[in-house]
Length: 194
Picture 1 (tube, one colour):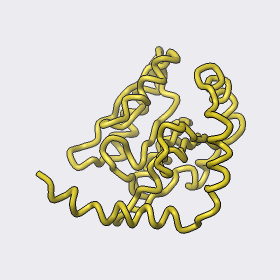
Picture 2 (cartoon, one colour; picture 1 turned 45 degrees about the vertical axis):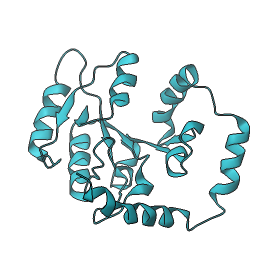
Picture 3 (cartoon, one colour; picture 1 turned 30 degrees about the horizontal axis):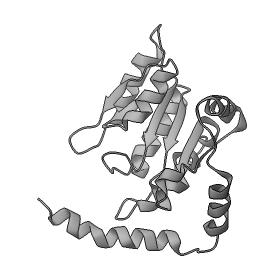
Picture 4 (cartoon, helix red, strand yellow; picture 1 turned 180 degrees about the vertical axis):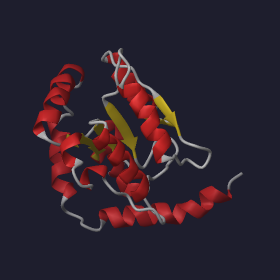
């Protein structure tokens, strides 16, 4: 299940591997009610064909930019635990978060690490999108099938690109705070545009 609006690739990759993706629409203010989410997920979990197995959380979200609040993440975690669902957390834009709602990883909530695969990217936060340097983390038993699938469809980025990232990654501890400050400075200009 994905939250609408969703990143189309989330749907595509799942369906390319034979899964079925369902959407749960956020309201016009990009919020949801826990009871509605629970009812929707129960309905999907109990169906005969393609029973619900996972919730995809994309926060900060592509394409909306929505950052899930702590309360929203707790509600998703409660639903996942109650229905024994996996959570796939796309956090590739975490270092771009500015404003009042901080980025929180759902895997850090009680009893969620063992049911969460977190996906992230150096390519986004280091502005090297074409390099395709990302990672997933979680319990080994959850990641083993991901690794098996990834080995079939992806080829590693070139070794020199990996080495370059490894060298600069730890060199500048102020990089991520400056990145957020840069985006914060641009926000008023973007909001002024019609």
